[in-house]
Length: 137
Ligand code: NI
Image (cartoon, rainbow, N blue to C red; front, side, top):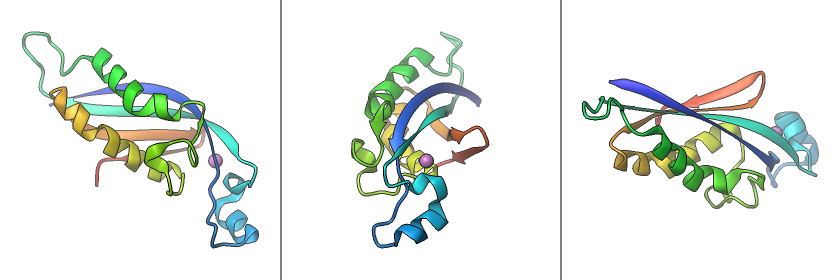
């Protein structure tokens, strides 16, 4: 089994807030990300897929096709968008990096299988100091 990773970047606005909490509680729990007037991050996204090497090509899968898939299912939807308001797969959800990773997984898991490999992990870095990883469960 060989693991290959495609790295992408995107910029998006969001805010972390629960309408059923007071401003003070939102700020206490979510910190700067609770700012009512929004803010943005420059996100970095690593998508790792795994599979066997195709002896005909020497590839697990064609990374150009992974790139196109990520553009269609993820980047076109999130880049320079508001994660809370503009992104269909984030509607009604908290726009934490954790939730974003899980929802991106749901978007791309099946399309990646169609390319002859399996999704292994999604890693998202929201700031220089924090990143999260999701392995599908
Ligand atoms: Ni934030």
